[in-house]
Amino acid sequence: MRKPIIAIAGLTACSGCQLTLLNCEAELPELAERFDLAYFPLGITEGAVTGPFDAAFVEGAVSTPDDLEILIKLRSRSRHLVAFGTCALWGGVAAMNNHESRNALLETVYGEGGSEMKSFNPQPFRHFIKVDFAITGCPPEKPEILAALAALLRGTFPVFPRYPVCTECRSRENRCLLIEDNEICLGPLIQAGCNARCPAVGIICEGCRGPVDEANVAAELELFLEKGFTREEIGRRMRRFCPEWDYEQRS
Image (cartoon, rainbow, N blue to C red; front, side, top):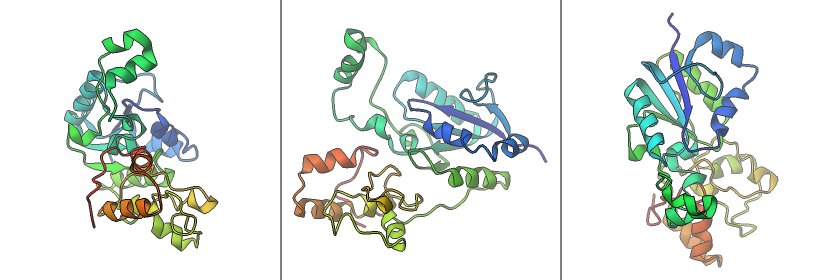
């Protein structure tokens, strides 16, 4: 059977999603045997965006003309394009200050030369291209990456959890940090798949996996306000990984 030809790339990002794949150390020999990693700048020196690819796994947000050029090139040369991680899917940390002046942010980081840089507000892939599949997370969970690759061998993609982190949290019988401790825990709004790792050790859900389908955002906002949090504080917390919440959304 022909090996699927794979591209793995990163745009404006920390490379953490790609590193999670490289951290699947026990599985890497089998992955190398079953897939043709034709383009993977972080892991393989040689290679170019030539294609055609059976699938391109791309992480990061789009924030420069070069990002957009690479993304469009990979989209046009790939049968499937996978948004790899929260930044690719929702904008992520790179986009959390999109409400501020881009030029001001560039000058803060790079000084006077920042205003000359070709950069725009970081955006998720769906603003520019069609995305065939997504693996969310900051970074994604190893089992989900491996499940996606395994399914690709069979010409399909896996089904990931479509319920909120709260469901996993309650199944673990964790203390509810939102109701019992009055903290800004985003568990009711965030896609499961992490096994409620943070709330299980008393750390609030920060929302790193992005919104769950049919999240009741309006009701959650009302609850936070009733608990005495300000809109500014709530907004700052919620846009950390997803700046485009619809605060009027009700499930």
